[in-house]
Image (cartoon, rainbow, N blue to C red; front, side, top):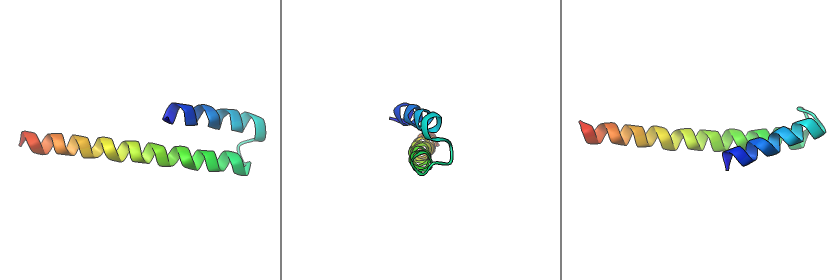
Length: 53
C-alpha cells in the first residue's frame, strides 16, 4: 500500500508538479500511511521488549 501510494505520488509530481494540490494531498496521505506504519512497528517492538523483561 505504501509503495503503491509512493508510485502514485511520483507520477502526480511529474505530471502536475510538486506544488499542485493533488500532489500535496497525495503526499499527505503517504505521510499518514508512513506514520501509521511507524507507530505499529514501534508498538510491536515495545511489546516484544516488555515480554522479554
